[in-house]
Length: 441
Image (cartoon, rainbow, N blue to C red; front, top):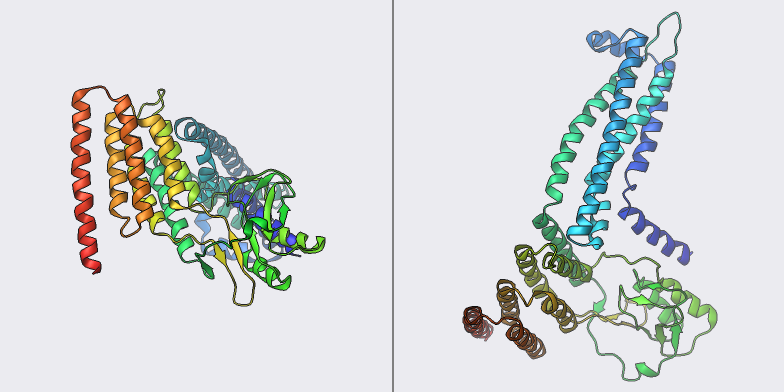
């Protein structure tokens, strides 16, 4: 049952990111609505009553009704083709100009899914209504069904205008950066609000605990910590997840470690609670950081050469890294009635080092971007407070950036402007730290 539940959760995450998430249910809704309309038209007097109250809106000719519905079906199919073409063009532009890893952000966009779904649902419903109009001597026309199809067809035209306006706004780079940034902020907020998590030192003998290998080549996805804690208590052991979330795990390499040896059926239950997956998900705080860095690196590539976008990304990275700095490293979980579970987590120093290694590799030839990177690092230094380890790692990254910039920037004027910025940033950071220490006394 646990395995079925975990598979359902994984399938649900994949479905939500698919562009067919809303169109398929909306097509089925159009099918059911068309059949329902046919039933009401043939088994009730509802259509006749509507015709009596609104005679001007009713169509009396079967040929006219067929012609109108055929026109709407043909026009909607054209809109579907055009919309799909625009989506493919959007995905191609995003992948080439920003990052291929941004595509799930667009395929999972509800407004785009709703647009496609409404078109397809309206086509299916209109087609069923068209087939229900049969030639007879009485010249019966399902007025209510035809009227509803016309209304949905007109609504599709308005939705098309909304789609064009919406898609033109979504492909703007500043909108993409802001969207990714907000996703990261929400991930940090969710991590801070997580219940039963805490920050604790790993057991000293964890290196000697028996290893449970990964059953597949995949990634560490959404772990059922509550279930894992219950199993740890039931098996009288402690558990350590020795692979970081989102990291690739080759088959037969360590996935878990347990304090005490376990039987095979117990190991199987633990693996089901951890549930390694074949496809990586990005529903937490670290993937947005990597996406922002990807956008900045793509902007600084020779083919694009857009320092403005890179500086916009650096501003958002400053806010996101500042939040990560103040976020507790939740590496321990224990439910009220369960056992202890430790996990491997990325610390702020490792995240900052990874970000700066990439940024220094691709951005140190542009003086303006270097100056913005120095400002980011000194702003982060201002937020370290009394955390000495964070102070040291930020200062170390400042020194690395200074070394690389001295090697890349040869113009004396540019060197002088960078030096002036460093002196100003250093003075502002120190003044801010002094003010904060005064306020906390």
